[in-house]
Image (cartoon, rainbow, N blue to C red):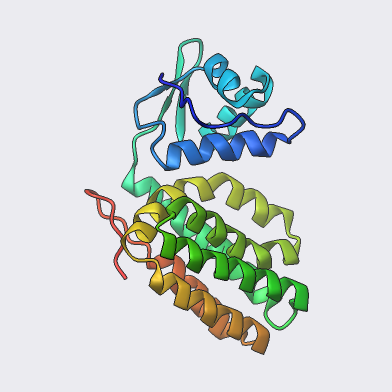
Length: 221
């Protein structure tokens, strides 16, 4: 498994979530490609951490379907399974719909400001062609209502199935992220207005605009 040479290590004081996100993103952006073997020792050296948080991250990635672990043998990056992406997309969409239904008209000024800031950074990243930064900003945007709601069950479901969807979202933003930018602006307005049905419908449409054919993956606006 070739290890990237120019990526700085994770600070040892950071939480397990940081190791998980780094490995998740390396799979999503194809730093580690489908079928590639992942060795916890090499990954720990790359990130500058012990093997324990790496092993925990690999277990989470296995639950999400991004890696396949064979007990006593190896852990490899999974192939992109269109059906698995569609299934995960539908679950993720349902969780986000629940979040906006329960937070429409209830978000604080600070929470709305965080959504606006995330969307501003999303637009800047698209303009710069930085798909990774655009995906991070998009994730932050959609998690504001989820965090505001404080439903741990929803957050747990998104933590499990969200990474699968991110692989397909990368195709979406690389092709055309402007439609997502406009949907973000519309969603902010609907949430401020307390339009529960409008926010719910738009959220459903946003996630289901991510269409996945059996071959290849693509996004249709």
